[in-house]
Image (cartoon, rainbow, N blue to C red):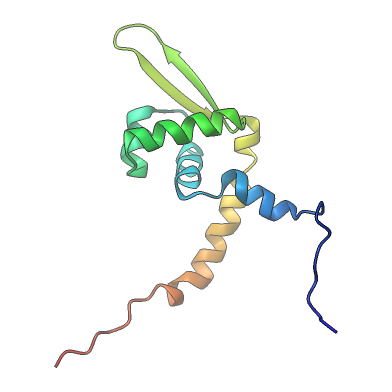
Length: 118
C-alpha cells in the first residue's frame, strides 16, 4: 500500500498554478522592480540585467496576465512606462515574506565553501 498522495487529474494546487503565472526568473525580477513604482523600459532593462528582447517578451506576458500596465507618451522622444496593476501590487506582501524567509535561511545555503589550495 502506497502512502503517497495522488490528486485527481482535474484537482490542482493553487500555489503551483500561481508559480506558473509569476514564477520565471525574469517575471519575478520585473515584478519586484516595479514594486518601487512606475519605470521606463530602459530602467527595467538596466535594473534586471535582461536583454531587450527578453524584457519585451516578459512585459507583454505580464500585461496579458494583468499584472502590469503600459503607458506610452508620444511626445518626442517616445517613452514607454510600466506600472503594476492592483493584481501586481497585491504581490508586495508575498515578496516581503520571501525576503524575510531568505534573510533567515539563505545565508547558510549560499555560503561559498572554502576551496583548499595545494
